[in-house]
Image (cartoon, rainbow, N blue to C red):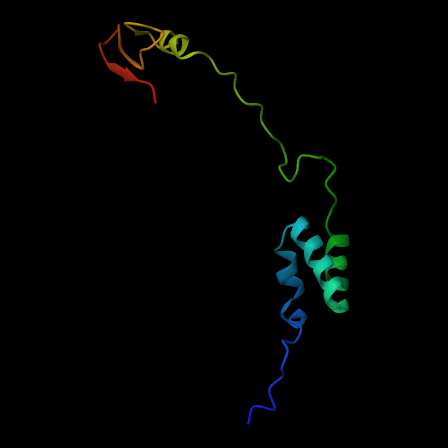
Amino acid sequence: MKDSLPRFKTGRAADWTRERVDQLGRQDIVQLRVNAERLGEAELAVLCAEVLKARPRTTDNSGGAAHKKRAKRLIPRGRAFEARGVWLTDPRTSWSGARKSDGTVVMAI
C-alpha cells in the first residue's frame, strides 16, 4: 500500500543553494536564517550566516533605499498655471485654461 511514503513533509533545506540565497535581499536572508533555526535546519542557518558575513553592511538607516531624493516643493494650482502662461477664468475653481501666447487649452490632472 502507501506505507512506504513519509507521513510528514521532510525538510526542504537541501533545495537552498548558495547561489539561490545570494539572490535574496539582506532582510530576506535574515528571515530565512531565523526560520531555519526555528525549524531545526542547522545547515541552512549556517549557509545564511555565511552569506550575511560576506555581504557588506549598510551604514545608513534608509530602509533599503540607497539615496532618497527630496520631493520637489508643491505649488498651488493657480500659480502653476501662471508659471506656464495660462490664463484662468476663476483661479479658485478652474482646472483648465487657455495659454495666452498660442491659445492652447491646458488642463490640470
